[in-house]
Image (cartoon, rainbow over all chains, first blue to last red):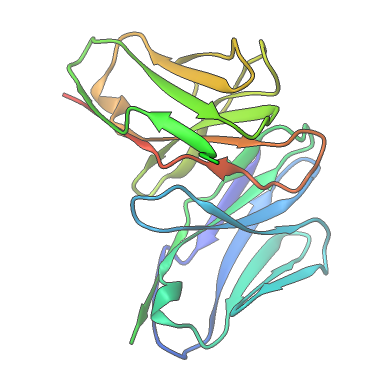
Length: 110
Length: 114
């Protein structure tokens, strides 16, 4: 059964304090790993797609990396506006279902 | 462009009542999905559709039915609502034939079952 586990559940950082969020997965035939950002009361918003181990993607202060068993979302020198829940998801070999993890609530204090 | 629109945004039901959530997308997407989001549980896939007239079960399909009679619409029905179905429901859509994984989400529908 496909499974996505994210850690930690919540993370509080000081502005400028870099850290990483973890997403570990088990899926039959990974067809893509995805990161989303979700603000309170809103639907998730797409950030990145990673397809193969060793791949990296960057967007502003965020950098996503992928290994054969997990992905990391690195956040460098975060700002308060980076506060949100970050969701990891995988697409299985059928290529039609996308399964999400439970997310990491990130809070950045000024 | 409206993107993905969900109606209603809020609804309160009594146990045993029925209702339908409507999702409409104007991006000509083939794939559409219904998820529910509960605290600490993340997004769980209820049902999905890979094209007009097709539907398939996701992770938590029990108690729900869906229909995709038109390409732009995906309906989620609750025939006999239960308190366990209190949740925020999100509809999403995506292109077919690509593996970008970019789902476009609606703003959510908050359902409370008393």
